[in-house]
Image (cartoon, rainbow over all chains, first blue to last red; front, top):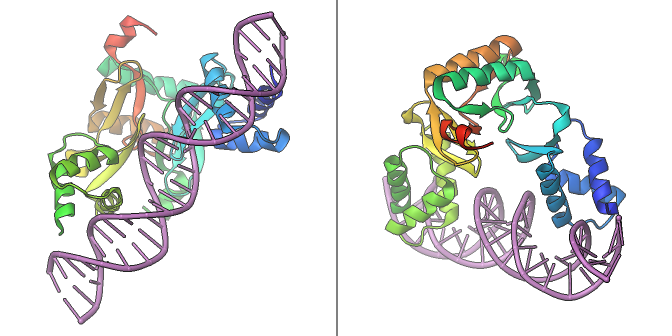
Length: 125
Length: 125
DNA sequence: ATATATGCAAAGAGTTTGCACCACG
DNA sequence: CGTGGTGCAAACTCTTTGCATATAT
């Protein structure tokens, strides 16, 4: 366990929700200057292989989150970028509906769901 | 309407399903050599603004598709990369369910849905 | 001691931008 | 003739990789 790795893990553990590799790099460097991007990517991959992290695809690209935060679906407003999430129960209900008709076992957590939040629906199209 | 633009539009119209900007570039160049990537991107943006195309986010990045193909949700198997899709009716049913509980009006077509296809569920995890 | 993590530098993919030039209409 | 599309070159972001070095255990 190197200082770099420790700093990355600490940063991840202090993060609620998701964070991009670039942001991990930026924040880690505030504590341990000089940490190389490749170290960030390699460590994120490792932590994902170990089952500590998962990544999801949001509009701006990949974002990592701790697995122990519980499964949830990202809802992102395409107009104001506001984020909300679907609980595990709701998500799994939807997943079962898809599975029932397609034999496809969906994981709604891997990609975000785009749409319009309540506020932006009223405001415009 | 320039030859480049015409070639791009022709390529798009001959494409069933989705295609990445890079692939559009590659295929267009087979017909009209020398077409510049920036022309591809600018034209795709234009066609999207005009409402002819939309883009969706798949595992490998953005993919464009004709709007007149009808709304559908991309289902991609995370193991074998097989693709399937959800019909408009099914998609809209799911969208209504999300909307009911969150006041969020989802567009399930913008991001793909990852998961395991029927075949890969049996094969492994 | 030795397995392995890091830094470095380079490369690579995808995408965007400013600008001069050319062409369509 | 003028608007605007195109090519070109450069730059930018994000990410990956090979290799020599440094470090944890």
